[in-house]
Length: 359
Image (cartoon, rainbow, N blue to C red; front, side, top):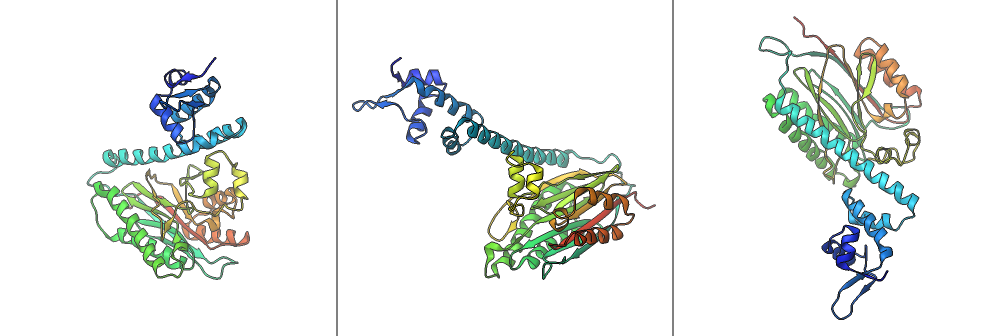
């Protein structure tokens, strides 16, 4: 079979002539020959396989720059790259799904348990932060109040004031009244104000690009809670004896796990496991996760910095969280557990129990 005209090649490859011209300009799929007089493009039949691969990858939504990389790989490596791309798409879709669910809940939620004469659920809480056994200073901030729980893990030369500044912004929500219908805007504003507060701290530092903080915070609203999360501090829920992680780490290693490039066991010992992809930073605008959760009497929430979660096995955390009676004793036990495991980092914990409203 001889060379195909651009029209015949477009029909066979299911790519439009316009797309073929673009891919030629980008060097992704150049024609086999271009007529020097009239500029007509001609393609070889053996180019169809690459063209069809490009078409399929475009249907997946893969960017052209990444398609060029995939097309230059051997089959096995290309398959791994496609798998990694699709895992990332699914993770991004899950994040948008959570935001959509938040919006649906926020716009339509009416608590069937609440009326003008009933009281919101109450919480019993405790917070504790410790320097650990290796670090010279504590850059964590932990806070627990009647409406707010928060843990922040600062980093960089001014990490301590950065984490404190972020939590201080959210502490104002305890005293500021706002309509329940304005919750999404209130949280969005608080995240932006916390970001600006961290930038203010970073601006006064000699290395502002290295200063920032993670943040995981829970704001109580009736029998629901609003969860704000960015970075690798974590929130767990103990319900019916099971301990659930309800946040998603924004780290390089976690993104590699999401993309199928690492297993959970490999991630636990990866040398870059502490490298953050998202945080409240002096020089970035990374988005925070915002979600709603229904709270039930008997629930216990744990917020912690990675000084606990990266050092203490999940089974040991579960044992303490489920077996220790009061929040005060629980946070002391958890910090002690981290220090008995070497205490390589600052460790902060907040534990809160959800209670029936008092008569």
